[in-house]
Amino acid sequence: MGGHLIEASAPKFKSTVKELLNWAERQVNKGNIKVQLNTEATPSLIKEAKPDVLIVAVGSTCKTLSVPGSDKPSVVMGTEVLLGRKKPGAEVVVVGGGTVGSEAALYITEELKKRVTIVEMLDDILIDHEILNKTVLKERLQAAGVTIRTGWILREVTDKGVVCEDKNWQMHEIAADTVVLCTGFEARKDTVEEFRGLAPEVYAIGDCVEARRIYHAFEDAWHAVLKT
Image 1: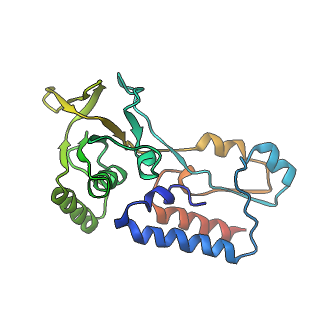
Image 2: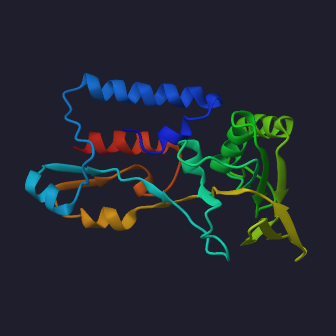
Image 3: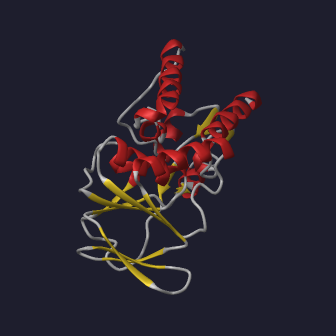
């Protein structure tokens, strides 16, 4: 259990998120709640259960990029690296400088001891991040030796690394063994629609409504429970 909180709490510097995940799991275990793991919730399964209230919290999926070479084995998702399912090489390019990309870059540099370059198409990393946390994270990235390229767009993944284009339409090659995609999440809205009308009351909460922050998921859940 835990969804994206599992990979979000993987780095050592995210210990407070790990505490939150552990707390949430303890609360479930304390309650009179039946947890059924390794089971896909399908419309037919829900119909058979005949619930009075259905809360859909199916989360979001990682966005992919359609550029030449994006199907190469060297291209992995940031969540796979954080979960330990993929091991990056010595030279790593992280595509995306949002919260996930910046934290993944720091994790790969500090804990996995790899050399990392962040490629971000916007003019700055952590655009939507709270200012204090943004400042601290940027300072840690700099101290860790992470190279940050803003205003650069990934154009191709090659056998030697990546090719990026800057704001002046100049092309740049970066050597890399591994390309880590951290380009955001997409809400699983289609899955939510499959469950509409299967109970007298149906509520969608969390990332399946819109990929947002942790507290939005808790807030959505709180409002849904108040309505039932």
